[in-house]
Length: 355
Image 1 (cartoon, one colour):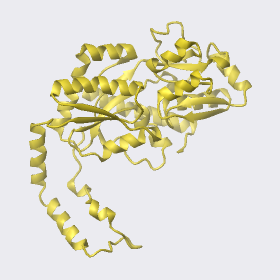
Image 2 (tube, helix red, strand yellow):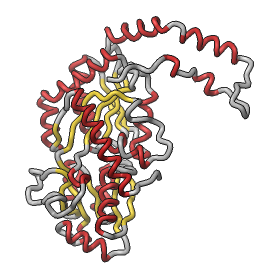
Image 3 (cartoon, helix red, strand yellow):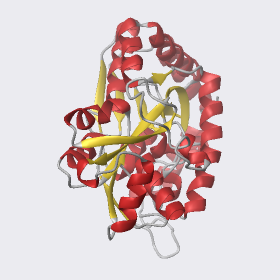
Image 4 (cartoon, one colour):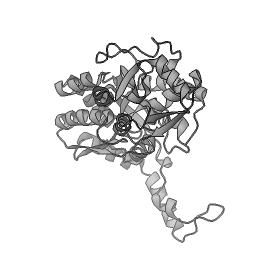
C-alpha cells in the first residue's frame, strides 16, 4: 500500500493560475501572500492528519462516485454497477456510476487522479488504460503506478476474436488467408493499446498483412460496426460480443486466453498455432482510488469490494461475464505489477507509438 505523498507535493491552484515571465517567476503583487499562506499550510501537517482521521472514522457520510472511463453498456460498466450496488448496500450510502469515456480511458482515469483522496471517488477501469496507455498515449497525465492505490480486480478467463460474416473465415488460418488477400484489414478497438489493438498489430507483424485500426469509445460501438460489416473484426469480452455472434453477422474464430464454456468449439489462439505471450493474456478490471487516500479508508473500501464476491447478484455477473475474482488486495497489486511488466515488453516488441 502506498503512503500518502508529502504535503510539499501539493501546489496551491492560485499559484498555478498566475501569469509567469520567461524565467518562470510569478508576476503578481499577491505572490508573497500566497507563499506565506502555503507556508502556513505546510507548517501544520498535524491538522491535516487529524482531519483525515476524523473523516475516516465516519466514512462514508455522503454519496460515493465510481468513474468508468468508457461508455455505458460495456462489461466494465456492468462490473462497476454490480459492485457499486453492493458497496452502497453494505456501507449504507448512495453509489453513483459515472461514465467518462474518451482518449482510450485516459479522460476518466485522469479525473480520478485529480479527485480529492478521500474515498468518495473510485476508479473502475480495464488494464489497457493503466498499462497500454503508458506507451500509446503521448504525455499521459497520470502515472498508473504512483497515482493510485488498487483495491481489488476481476480477471477475464478468455475473450473471443470475432470476424465479420463478410470475411468468410471460420478459423484463424482462414482469417489470415483473407487478410493477406485484401489491401488491408479494418479492425475495431476501444482505445490505443487496448486488447484488440495490440492483437491485430501483433498478428499483422507476425503473419505479414496490413491492418488499419479504427478506435471507438467503447466495446459496444465497435461490435455494432462489426454487425454492420463496416469492420472486418475485433476482439473483446464474451458478454460484449455475444449479440454479434448470435446474429450470425460475426463469427468467433479464436479465443484469447482460456477456452470459453459459451463457445466450446472455438479453439484458443495458442491451440491454432499462434506463438507469443500476448495470445495467452487475460485482461483485468480494477478498482482504485487516488494514492493519497487514507489507509483505513482504503482498507474499508477494499474489504467491502472483495466481500461483494460473496453476493449472489455479483456472483451471477461474474458467471455471465466469465471472469474470476475479486482478488485480494495483495494479489491485486502483485498481478498489476506482473501484468505491467509483461505487456510493456509486448508493446515495445510490436513498436506501438503514441497516437
